[in-house]
Structures are given as C-alpha cells and as structure tokens.
Image (cartoon, rainbow, N blue to C red; front, side):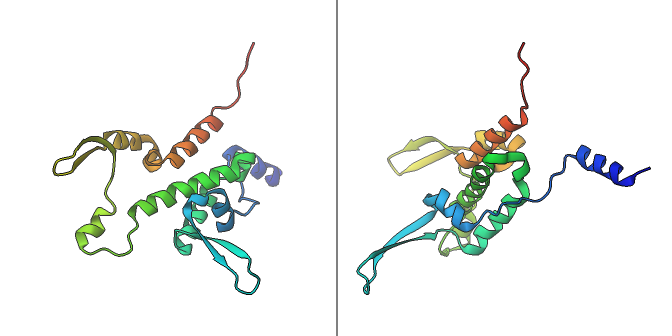
Length: 173
C-alpha cells in the first residue's frame, strides 16, 4: 500500500488548507481602512514641502495581534480574491471593539470597568436630567450564533461574505 497516496487523500478529505501565501501588514490595513488612522500634515522646513503621515489609532502591538488572529482565521486559499477584503474586515471589527473600550487612563475603577460595558441600540432617551436607555437584547440574541460579530458593521459584513461563500454553487435546469 502506498501510504503517501493514502495521506494525500486524508489531507484532501480533511478540508484543511495551508498557511496564507500573501502577507497582510499594518501598512495594508491603514491604507484600506484609513478611518483607523490619524492624519497629520507638517511642512518640511528644508524643502518647503508638505508631508502627510498617517498614524494608527491602535497601539502597534495590539494591531499586530489582530493581524495574527486574522491570518489564522481567514485562509487565502478559501477566500481567493476576497482575501484582502476579509482580512481587513476581520481586523477592523476587532479594532472597533478595542477602540470602544479604549481610554487614555481611567479616573476610577468603575470608569475602567464601564469601558467594557455592552452597549446596545438606543431604545429611549430623555432630555430633562439626560437619561438614555439601551436595548441589548438584539446583540445578545445575535451573539448566540455569531459571537460578537454582529456588534460592528465590519463583523456583519465579514459574516455575510462568509455565509455567501459557504452557500456553494447552484444547479439550474
């Protein structure tokens, strides 16, 4: 028996694909999703030219962790030409969640704890004594099947694309 042939069949049947051949970087993410950067413009005193730079709003280590997570989850051999788009959506989803929690320091432990609170859709608001109520039922119900993916528009787009890809072909008579 040819074991090489057997293991080749097992590998094909397992539906496991290899690592991504392309490399997705912070530079690509910042170019595709500039909303997560801060644009600064400075004049170069020596050349009198205007220099524009884009600085990520997310610390480099955190953004790199999101890129590593996306590389593990979004396989280029499955997404083909949509791979870069899917990688960006995956990372943008986590960046959005991170930025919702971000604070440049907290005055109290309660303020730090509140930065991770679940925020839903505004269900009612009052003007006198400024009261706002949130309905989190839709998010909680949505997370039963898709985790936190329904909590950002980037996650919703990614899940929608993934579901479309999983539908397979159609046979029309």
